[in-house]
Image 1 (cartoon, rainbow, N blue to C red):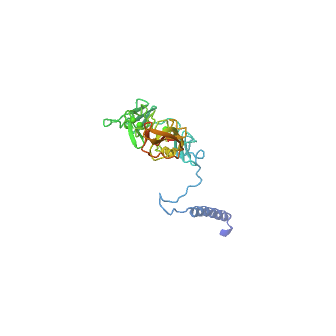
Image 2 (cartoon, protein in one colour):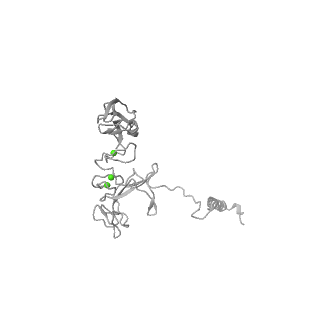
Image 3 (cartoon, helix red, strand yellow):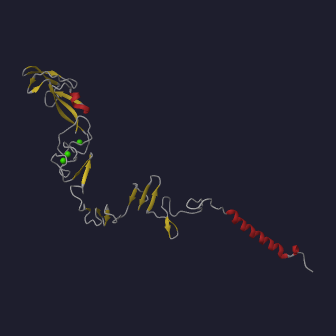
Length: 277
Ligand SMILES: [Ca+2]
Ligand SMILES: [Ca+2]
Ligand SMILES: [Ca+2]
């Protein structure tokens, strides 16, 4: 006489096992969401992936896992890439050796730099090639003029290697006493300062201008008929060959009287100015 199926002892055990198996299968089915787009535009999201190393370490494939190293670093605050440093000070900052020999444009090999050669034999080797010459292999460009270091391009008798700091300016060289009365963006005396102001004397003879006008933007300091321009007077012609000293300031206009005295046309005086050198 057989027992009812519901009274069989293994029935409930088997039922629980089947229910558990069903829940496991259902969780897998419900937990999987099919991507709505195909790669590379797919929307599969990687989760629970831990980067290697510290913040800023650039990730790379290290034998199938994420790898990071202090020698390859991205400073996201300043947008700088560091190789060999975690504190890059430039857009690309490399601490260590660097080499490239695959191009003749710029090669670095064994501490030597080569331009036009992949095998620089000196600290700096420039190979102009068969089409080079005329200074095209090495020149300095300034104020829109490019000039080889051995050539006098502006005709002032000096080269970049011999006292000229600007081959676009014939009045610019070491020792030049040229000046301008307004800034011109040049370093006339090659002292390393563009448009620096220095005191100088300007002669003002029957110009129809005052010393303030003659001195220009730099400004007038003092006037005088003495060469130092300090005695506060100008020479005014009174008749042929005769002048009289008359009080003057920076704003006194030297009128052209047509008389000449002391070898100059009057009125005349010296202006002590601030000039651009
Ligand atoms: Ca020159
Ligand atoms: Ca020059
Ligand atoms: Ca200067």
